[in-house]
Image 1: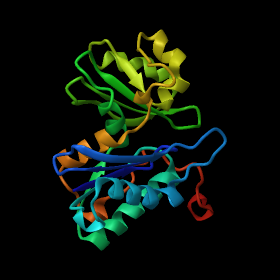
Image 2: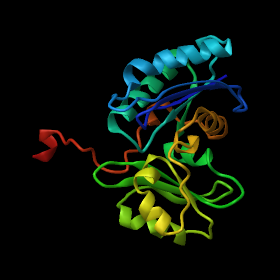
Image 3: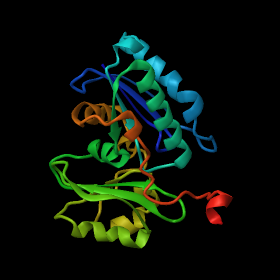
Length: 227
């Protein structure tokens, strides 16, 4: 069985799937307005709940997928550290899941390419773009909003953008002809189904090679680094 999770966004998302990636159970925690992300206390509890729903024990897990970002620094550290500890304890292989690819996969269809965008704070968005067949058009990067219209030059449209970054910069994207689904559309959330599918399809990596993909430097820099 597969266990996959992502903590790169404020949400904590967990899925359990069969070896072919077919989703069996999903659990998630989406913080409400003014609520802090619950990655630390929620991740293992959600994983246990998903395994219970699927009717399997931890010992049934043979492959573990973890979202590696880009996204929130604290969330990524919690997710990757948990994945490495579980992989060591369970003796299972690990898969690094690009969070933006998982987000885009939930929105890809036969109509056109997708721009996955997460709010990166500092007035930027983490972005990556994928063709309708899934090929990467733009590797994960941090872009200022004025650059977002450049995405339409990567491939013929019609383009669609998803993620909380697409919501934040809706005006810039729609001015460039990029469609952004309604604010409450489920397409804007990282979901367990794509996470499990990517975990099933991607090649495993060494446990020690499972590291966050930050894309840019952290907001807080230790004083020793400043010196």
